[in-house]
Length: 154
Length: 179
Image (cartoon, rainbow over all chains, first blue to last red; front, top):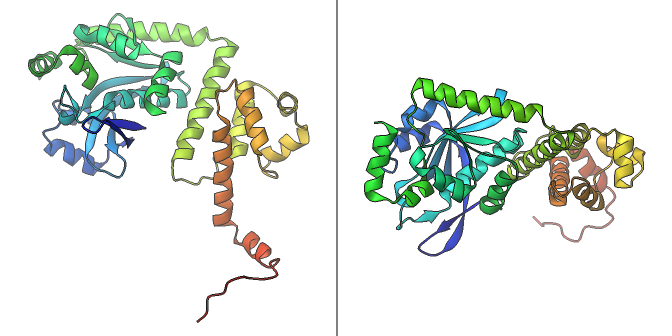
């Protein structure tokens, strides 16, 4: 997968991998993340880095709900330097989300990914990522998951 | 800190669009609200899973094979368990076809498919193209081909006897390192 280096408008190779002990230490000592990721450690947490690099560009915490054949997102956060109008890398959250769709196909969940979203920004997720709304739940599956994979991982 | 408080803090620096672009922030649900949301999702998902048609099951199965192949191809691993034959067995299971039916669909003799399934014959590029079409273009030919190449790589690493056997058939060596 590739993320966009905004200052040069060039694509850079990136990878998503499971967090390891050293990564957790780096996150705890870093000012790059707003949320308390120690609380997310009970879930499965993946990091996005540039290929061959240790700097974490974004994180995602998920739960594999096997009985319901779905991946549930608990939190996604871009590193501080990848937010707002002066961000260094773009597509970080998109790549993280698309990777979850890929995992959800890999597990034969038909690409089903869900989250409980904050009400104020639900419409932004539905527009940007084609999530569908169901009460407090947002979900994406099937063709829409494939489109995200196509957009961010090809 | 509650997520709402963090969200308000973020709003001081970013627009909602910028927040949605960089975060997936969960709602602050009470235990009761969370249970209700989960229950609603479970009812919806159960209904979806129970009402899946055969076609939808095949679709889900093919995409599962596709992304498992992709993950293996992109990894540096060489794994005996992830061979063309293993994935073809999965393919038969997912498509609910027997060997004879699949061989007919692909326009090859059933003994040839059987030889590939028993790792006695390698998958050809032509067959990779046919498998791509057979899957409704869901599993690209390049994945089958790369899988076959990984098998060859594994053979090179694990089969020194074959290398020696072939070396004995060479009649002339054009370069020898001199002491």
